Amino acid sequence: MCKLCMQHAACLENRKCMRKTSCIFNETLHAQIEEPTLIILIINKSCSEIINLIVSRMPQQLDVIQKLSAHRGKVWSVNWHPSGKVFASCGEDKTIRIYNQEKDAWVMQAVLSDGHTRTIRDIAFSNCGMFLASASFDATVSIWDKKAGTYECNSTLEGHENEVKSVAWSVSGQFLATCSRDKSVWIWDITANCEEFDCAAVLNLHTQDVKKVVWHPLEDILASSSYDNTIKIYKEDPSDNDWTCTATLTSHSSTVWGITFDKTGKRIASCSDDCTVKIWQQYEVGNAEGISTPDNEPVWKCVCTLSGFHDRSIYDISWCKLTGLIATACGDDHIRIFKEADNSTKNEPIFDLETKILAHKQDVNAVKWNPVIPGLLLSTSDDGDIKIWKFNNL
Amino acid sequence: MLSFIKRFRTESEAERFNAVRSVVVKVDDVVHPSLAEMGYANEEELKFAIYDMLRTIKDPEKPQTLEELNVVSEDMITVKKVENGQVPVVRIEFNPTVPHCSLATLIGLTIRIKIQRQFPQTLKLDIYIKKGTHSTEDEINKQINDRERVSAACDNDNLRKLLESCIKEDD
Image: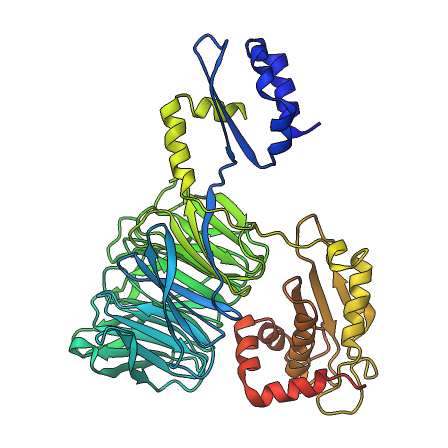
């Protein structure tokens, strides 16, 4: 007996009033309906008649809108343009691909293939939307602009000794940060119009490979995560323009692959090879909780650990600035979405797993929430695909 | 099902719901092949197939194979019970030839590359040095299971040539 039949039988037993409607479930309909299916019956007040019947695919909380398979090999990263109407991807095939939305579909607009000689690991659009930076295993960072109508590489930043793993623009547009397997984080000072990039600081504070750099959403404060299991926070000292590390966050027991700020910048979520996600809360100098702040700098405390949800290493994490949802990209090929519970508090936050979906055929490498459209998510994978998702339960 | 009926009480609600659904383009769902679809009757058979691939890998600096040097053996491969719809998770341990073997990283890398090629898309690999057999095993274990470093290593032409020569099968 199929699932539908059983449900129908249950209806007959429990709701005698629906007996009249049994003719709707004829054999043809049975044959046509494949799981997962949603059937909505609209019945009249006295439950004697069906007014309408809607047969639809079962809604998933996370639904794929489109799949893009242009890259050859692993797609390492993807990032939205600040307008939310364009995104760029990069990967093992040494290309950057730019997509924009045409009517209902996302269409590839450009392929940039002459920038790097090895895998392109990460890309990021500047907050002004005029520039795109790409980081490559060839130890360089390229800056692309569209001044001439098409994307052209007009600057190449050299300095790292080996693979550059991540690149990020500061919110003010004044700085660019990069990090590498050479254990260093570089901060580049950008002159007007992005004509020149001067090295403002080389921060050799991690003891291993630096995996990710992410800027604070409102201020020029930088966070980096590493193979040395830590996260570090950096700030510029306005008196002498020196960049210093103001905090080191330790709690993960293996490589920290990804970090993401919430919209206020007072919280960080991190994901790791130890299969956990951690939420960190910033406590300002003179905080009401009475947490000591040595050196007159804010301190960061791990206030929540999400363990037992992920089966393998977690490679990326994205905290949506619009909805507060957290998405993770995992080595078990799944995307998971977490939502803060209603009874969650600042010092003891609670996050519930909203949905978990087998998203790709291989490891999921990156997830990114759209900065303008709530619930729109991008993911990339080793399987060569980029997928665009819509989260339905906002 | 009844809960859905309750949720969409009015026609307009249902219509609104359908309007949302209509923008969703159906894309093939991801389904991992079962062991049977991969051509193996059970986990044990998959394990033997993997061992068959490993045994012929040549040591990077000696003329012998990993089997001849006792670097790999059948009982050091574990295939986790494959539940419905899951990808097989395979753990491979190996014995470095000497406790300070400088080529342990390369051996680990060679094992990974050979199996990844043979099983495109369908395995999750965890490769470890057998506990207590190497002076810096934790360090090496972390390195050979870091997919970013593995990818970067395979991007390197010299290393790639060396890997290929270890993997190459004699006719």
